[in-house]
Image (tube, rainbow, N blue to C red):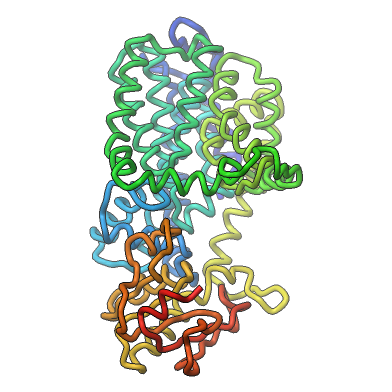
Length: 511
C-alpha cells in the first residue's frame, strides 16, 4: 500500500489560496488553475491507482473462486443484450459483453476484470471532486482512501452493479460542481447524462439527484442556475428513457422485483414488521463497508460538517444512509444498499479528518489497507483457510464443480435438457455449461416469474425427457435418481442434491 509519507509530501503544493464556486468562497490550500481545480495531486494519485489496480488484477488472475450467482446471471444477460432485465437495469450486462467480446473469452477473470479498473477510475474522479471543493492534499487522500475502502477492495474482486454505478456517479458529481462553478448548461447536461448512466447500472443512483437537490437548497455555493438544472434533468431523462420504456413494455418487471426486495411496501401495514435489530445490524455493517475510521468521520461530518463545502457533501451523501436505515427498521436491508453514500461521503470523511483529526488518516489507511491486502490473498489461497471444516469463502466455491457433475450426469443419461428450480444452480450451469451443447431451463412459472430464468428460459410442456436437479424427488418421480452429487464442500455443502429423469410435464409440476 502507498506510504503515508508520499501522501504527506503532496501537501508541499498547498499554500494559501482560495476558490470560488458561484460566488461563494471555500477555503483551500492548494495551487489552482483558472478552473479553480487544485493541482499537483493527480500524478501521485494516478501512479498509486495504477499500481493497486494492477496488483488486484494479478490477484484476480490467480483467484480460485467461482463466479457468484449474480455474476453468472449478469454474464448471461450480456449474451442476450437488452434495454433491461428482470432484476436490474442493463449497464452491467453491456459492460461484461463488451469486455468479454474484446478479449474473446468468457472466463471468470474477464467477467470480473472491469471491477478493479472502474474502482480505480472512481478514486481519481473523487479526487477531482476533492480538488475542486477542498485542496490538493485532500484530493490525494480522497483517491487513496476510496481505493482502499473495503467495499472498493471487494468490488474489485467480485463484479456487481454497485461497481458499474460508481465511476458514473462520481463523474456526475464532479460535473455538477463544474456546472455550479460556471453556471453553464453544458456541464450540467453532461452531469445528467452521467447520472443517467449510473441509474442504468443501479437504480440507487437516484439518491445522487436527491442529495444534489438538498445541497442546492441549503448550500447556495453548489446551486446551479435554472437553465442548467433543466439541462441536467433533460440529460438524465433522455439517458434512462430506453430502460423506462423497456420496463413499461415488460410489465414493470424490474420495478416489481425492487418492490419485492423492499418487502414492507407489499405488506398489509407498513409498521407490522418493525425490526430495530435489523437497523442495528445494517448500521454496524457500514463499519465493514467503509472501514471504522471513515464511517465514524462520515457520521461526524453529518453532525458537524463545518464549512459550506463539507455541508454540501453531507447533504449529498446522507440520503442513501437515511432512506436505507428506514428500510432496515421497517423490514430488512443489506449492507450494500447504501453504497451510494460513500462517493460524496469519502470526500466528506477525508475533509473532516484533515480539518479535525489528521493523524487518523494514516490509521484509516493502515486498517483499510490491511483489509485490501487480505481480501485478494484469500481469493488466491481459497479454499484455504477453513473455519470449522468449511472454507471461509465457501459461498464462492464448488459452483462450477457441481455444474460439471450435472453436465456429466445429463450426458451419461443421454439427455439434452437440464432443469432446476434452484436459481444458483441454473446461474452457474449457463456459464460453466456454455459450450456443452445442453439446454438449461427453469420449471415454467405458475403466475408471475420469480426470477430471470423463469422469465426467459421456462421449460416447455410435454412428455420429452429431462434431467431434473433438486434436493428432493418430486411427487411425480417414480424411479430412483440417475445421479447423486458430491457437495461436501463449498456453496452446496449443506445440501443433498440429486438428479432424476422426468418428463417436462412432471418437472413443471414439481414444487
